[in-house]
Image 1 (cartoon, rainbow, N blue to C red):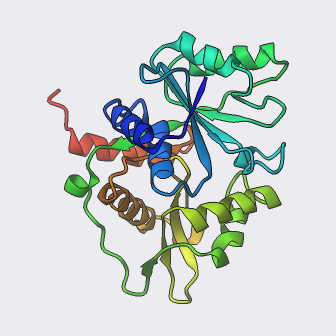
Image 2: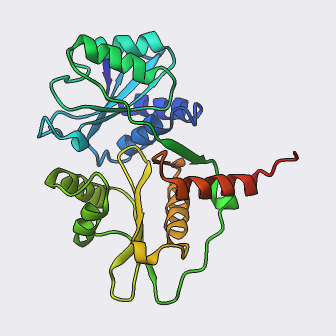
Length: 271
């Protein structure tokens, strides 16, 4: 196990991971943030260098101040060889199994390998599945919808965190509030403000470059506001060199139907 801290090696790794998109999405996005000031306070572990077969992004020890805080202890993983990934997790000090840990990744077998290593450490690892969407070039094909003149595009600010916390399905507590506040402070976000300056629809990015935590207040739905904030965020990320991707839960049927419709329109079938 190696902690990769040399800037030239991290830049080289970023280029290698970019060529592996979309499988490398979260690790690549997180590494881009590390190479651009590291606002999330992350570090990179590899099984070996330069011929690496597994990569793990984890928060630095000083970032995790609460051992039971899931939101501050998120990891992202990618492997070229599943056995190497398993061995990396088993390496002493790679993961603090005494903490609440969240490991994200897109590859088959990643959960099973993580679960088995966690079980051997006496830790139960739960599975959370989601739908991941990735757009290779939002600048070319995503059209910007018309915005109601009474509304204004902006970015989220610290004054909005309480609204986000009470409307997020996993929010409503001090840990989630602290997590959302850190995302607002450190990473790009987009929102639509009403005439009073209150957010009615928003979209955020996280430490792995993921578009997430999107929401539209119920009374403002079906007006295209979420499409606006998503497209604005996607284009903003793309302009900065980041891949444009996000997650949604498998039971979020309105978003899934919309995503499928957009993909079908962009890539129509001949059948």
